[in-house]
Image (cartoon, rainbow, N blue to C red; front, top):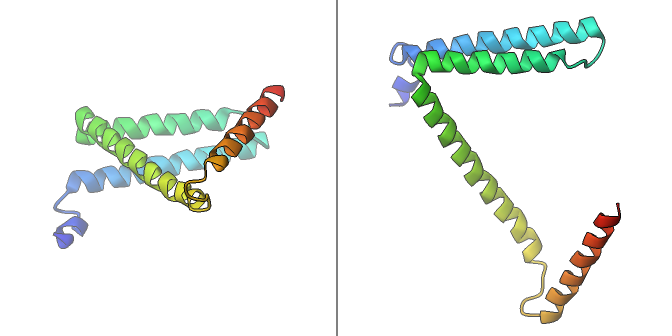
Length: 125
């Protein structure tokens, strides 16, 4: 199966879409460089170029794979990103939770007081 994955003849649509995507992204990057060099800074035109590049790339994917397949891929990618972020946040949360003493009710009261004080400070700013 690993040999099939790398063989461009087995999945010609995927290979074609990948090369067309590289071309579109390269063209978009080149246009952004031209816009930035002509205007000597950020003017907002490069955002339009980036947005246009994204739209063209999406339309290309829809043309090659079909609109429904692109929607399913986007949904799957969104769910995967959400799961990865949740896992990362849980790992980071544990770094802080292990520093708290177990079963001390005063810690919860003190932390709640600190959180309320921070909210008041944020309200003043």
